[in-house]
Image (cartoon, rainbow, N blue to C red; front, side, top):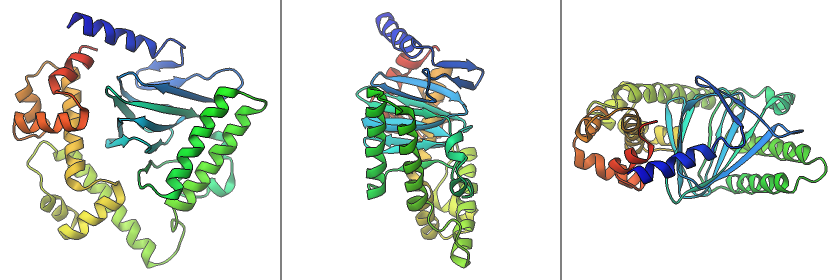
Amino acid sequence: MSEQRGTNAIIREKRYEDGFRVLQGQREYVTYPDNTSVRIWYSEDPWRFEEHVHSAVEIVLTLEGSVEYVVDGVPYTVRKDEVLVIPHEAIHSLAMGENSSRLLFLFEPDVLMSLRDLKRLPGLFDRVFYLHDGSDTHTRIREMLLKIRSIEKEQNLAWNAMIYSYLIRIYSALCQHYMSGVITRGRETTVRAVDQEVITASMVYINEHYHEELSLDDVAAFAGFSRYYFSRSFKKQTGYFFKDYLCQKRLQVAMELLTRTELSMREVASRSGFGSVATFNRAFREKNGCTPSKYRAIYGGR
């Protein structure tokens, strides 16, 4: 156990060795290399960041395995080749287990937000984009992120400007593919807006009642939808089936309890909403690739 904790301490220290994380409470002040406002960070070490917030936009591209994010209370499992865009000033936490790797892009959005046609689109710079549909746009954005990484490594003349030119292209693609119809008038847009509001309220309801016995029928009734319409709308809005979202929320709570408390496994399972320790252990292993006990040994005591 002491050897394991020693290894984990070294991993934690490596996060700070170039001095780019400056924390005051939950507020992080991202520092950048000279003559740029972009930082790109590759890691294959297992680690965990508690809830924090910063002025930079954060984009993660998972290369192997998966990275677990919670953004403003909503969990996301970002798997290989998937992309998650976290807006500036969003409260988020993240964790990456063993046998995973990712690229993390941090940049100040001022240049993009100064472009009038992008700035006028409601929600473009305030919403999460989870790219997991395998569409041409998803693939193109992933390739542009890899190109940005290559530009940053080579650092040829005007490389920072070149990176921002790609970021503009990325946001243009996000706008065209994932926000089509946002400024469209008419009944269809109104229905979509109502559905989005109801699903958002349902997510808040789940986040408040995850520790109870909660079924699809229960939440659909809360939303005022039939179970079938609610299920389709929930998947479309969040990218998750209801059951998977609920399980992910419970697992996130369990991970917090494992790292912040010394509660027994039975109590952790109960407080996070799992009906039994066996169900808890099985779900935890499927999502994290290790037992709850091993997770506590690695990430506990911080």
